[in-house]
Structure formats: structure tokens, C-alpha cells
Length: 389
Image 1 (cartoon, helix red, strand yellow):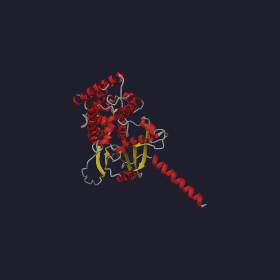
Image 2 (cartoon, helix red, strand yellow):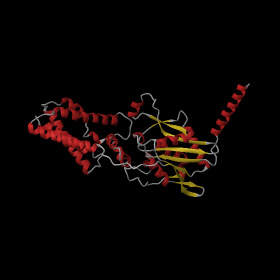
Image 3 (cartoon, one colour):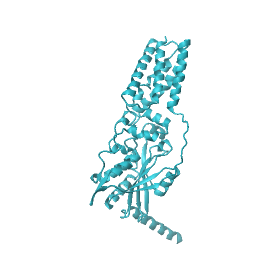
Image 4 (tube, one colour):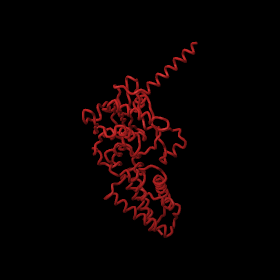
């Protein structure tokens, strides 16, 4: 009898909770944009955006997070590299969400939106539909489709013409690459690698809405946006709260081994070997085989990202000019006495790389100045291969 009563009680509790989750939000509900500061790990370098639904009457306080992925996905790393990894919308209680970011010492900002009861409920319903198993996944794209752009998309889709976004953002005169660089100021090797991988699409000037691919700029976009109401046009952000602000310790300057220092040092060393080689008529073809094998392998990676992945930001990568995949093949053909066609190949590339480097310095914004010593190394060694019969 006792078990029967418990079963009835649990069934009633389940029924009531089910009805509560299907209810409309109360007039005391709030919808806000959460912006989290960048973290120390590479995946968190550019910050994070999410949507918070809070209703004290229904006892709802959840965070809708579009930046989640499943490590147990079959062939996870292969899909990630090829740009075929699906991200998902996850829903978690606010208290768990904020604890995780506090543990990482990442500041959290909240923008409470100025919405009518109908608009709040429409956004809430749209988020619940998106969180259904059949809708929860989406194909992630670093620039076009991520945790920040998804937040903007759902707000736009629901509010439609009521939302007035600024035609020109305060940061819309920058390219996507320029917007990324401040986040990588203290991460020299990561910046070098990212600049090697990203192609020309990220050098386009970002329009007002396009700046929202970064969480901080999504926050700025909402600060500048307005909404049409019965009382006229008003700012869409009703109130802004700092939910968590970590104590920042003074970081002492220390000597960082950056790509720039390493590659300039490498240039000096190789120039020394080159002078010694010319003076004493030596042939360090093992040095050249190693150098061009590595550069050619980098070129193969760039080629793979360009043509065999779905990452939209890595196509048209001009780095493939100096990091040519052909060097990978040429490295195996190098000998102490090289054929004429191989020598002409290296001469042609030394001229091409020189022209490319000059164009970068004087005409086209260079990806990363750390590649200059690397280009000089390739010019010097390619020219020497041509000169030596």
C-alpha cells in the first residue's frame, strides 16, 4: 500500500513538473545574453556566448549553450580536422554554468533584454524547439556559425523587424583577422599557427552583423541595437550586470620564446652555414633535404585544409606560395649534384618567394611577420642550390 501511494505521488509530481515546463513564462521572466571572457586554453581563447532564461515564478534558471560538442562522437578528431564536426545546443542550470567559469577565472557579463512577454515566450519556445534531439546539432563554422552567431540568429528570427541592428558597428572597419589578433597577443605560437592556417576569407572587412562571430563583439552589437516597442524605439539592452569578475594578479614580464625570435635565430644560423659552405666549398644537402621536407609538409597541410575540409576560413591561403607542397617532393630528389631541372625549379621558387615577400611587405597586409625570416631562409637556400652544380 505504501509503495502504491509513493507511485501515485511520483506520478503526480512528474505530471505537475511536465505541465510546468510546458507553461508560458511569467511576466517576471528575464531573457539575457551571457558573455564569458576568454580563457587560457586555445579552445576558449575567443570567449563564449549563451542565452539565459530566468523565471522566478516557474523556478526556471537555465543557460542555453550552442558551444557544446560530444567527445564520444565517432571519428571525433578526423571530423574536427575536416570541419565536419557537429556542435550542439545544450541546456544546463545557471548555477552549474557559472561555477565552471568561476573555476576558470573567466569574467561573466549579462545583458538583460528589453522584451515584451510575448517576445520572451517566443524566444523561449524557439530555444525549446532547438533543444529537441532532432534539432540540437548544427555544423560548426569558425566565422559563420558558432556559439555567438547562433545567439544572434535566434534573436533575429524571433524578433524579426522589431529588432534594429546598427548599420555600422564601431568595429566594422576591421577584417576578421584583425579582430582575432588582440586575443592572441600573449599566445605567439598559437597566433603563428592560426595565421598559417587561415586564408583570404578572414581578410575581408567584417560588416556590422558579421562582427558578432566573436562573443565580445556580439555584446557590443547588442549594446548598439534597439527594439521597436509600444512606447517607441528603445535600446534592446535594458540592464547590464557583471555576474563574476575575477581578481587579476599582476603578471611579471618574462622572456618568451616566440616564433619571431626562433626563426630569426634560425636565419642567422643558416646564414652562417651558408657562408661556411660557400667559403669551403661544402655541400650540406642534408640541411636542405630537412628544410624543404618540413616546409613541403606544411604546404601539404595547407593544401589539405584548403581542398579537403569544410572549413570556410582556410581557403585561398597565400602561404602556400612559400610553403609549397612541391618542396616535399623536391626534398627527396635533392642530392650533392642536382639535375638542371631541379636547380631551375629552386631558382624559380626563390624568385617567386622574393616577389611574394616584397608584395606582403609593401602592398598586401602580411599574415604574420614571423614568416619573413623563414622566407629569407628559403630564398637563400634555393638560390644556393641553383648556383651549385
